[in-house]
Image 1 (spheres, rainbow, N blue to C red):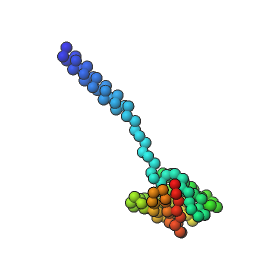
Image 2: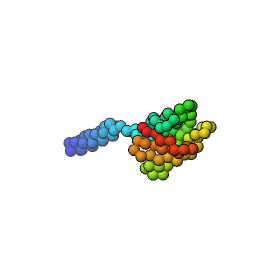
Image 3: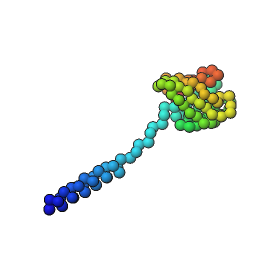
Image 4: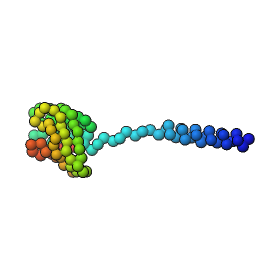
Length: 112
């Protein structure tokens, strides 16, 4: 009888552990800080960044391409814009709060 109780106890313990592990959901990683639509200042309309692509509207034309970012620290780094237009290439950036400044031929500041 004692062995039967031990076996049922072990089965119950394994079942509880199994159910608790299966109930845990993997939370998706949140998007990086740069993902989203950014509104530009001056004649720049907007830039929209995803994890891997961008859409840049300079007020006259829209440029799309691949995108990657390399952070130097929490407030600066480099971003590489793919494509075959004048804005493509590796650019330095700085950010402060919801403000992002990208150094194209001149610095352009965007807010989110």
